[in-house]
Image 1 (cartoon, rainbow, N blue to C red):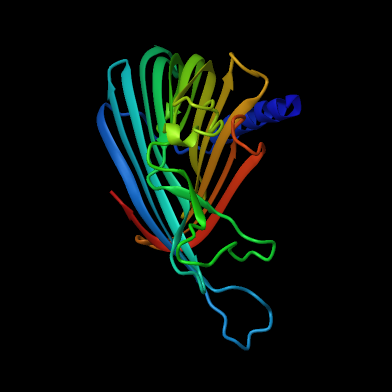
Image 2: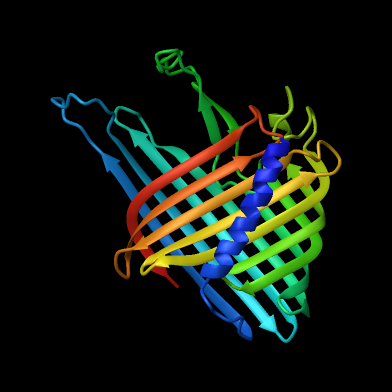
Length: 301
């Protein structure tokens, strides 16, 4: 795990340094500033019966809402970001669509200017999901264990606000612009909430058997950088790190998201999303990786 921490420190330094060099030179203006976009992407593949190369036809769709509400008055700032991201897919022959992406997140940071680009800050983060999640039990050949109508092949593993992750704490914010900032909180409280029916027979999402809440106290680092690689191609990076002082502080939780947007015209864009999560409380342990690419409709507001 020490190698992971060192790699993260190097990645964070590279992340900030490169972003500072490339970030758009927009200033933090007075008053309210609102901006956001809605992105709807589609993916589809199909093969006729003569196709010998293999493959399974599928259809997928995803909607992403990303909205910022920022305020500045004198030495005070208040930044808010809402992210709602939901996707489904259906393979040929499947009876229904299943979700392959589900994220609802709210970030809020308030700060008072200390000097130059530094602010005394306090932040709040809420992360949960909008829809129920489930797993299907299948045989080695990827077929259901039972196909009878009275057998429930899917087991619900999560649903709206279960789990729900809360973080809050004081710290210091370094903000170059709305497109480049890092918040450091050395005393960040974290709470995980889950419905008791998920912990009835064992631990779930880090919450112990029979409980509904887990509390942690640790340090958090949250960074954001958005910049243009070239004309009509932009990259958005969101990085969140957390270490729990109360248990295994050497193990760092990681949540990194990269969104590469390639604008075709005012309304059409191609997008590549990459997300990597390491949660020390998750089972099995290891990095959770998500990647999605699609061509879709993009509307800024």
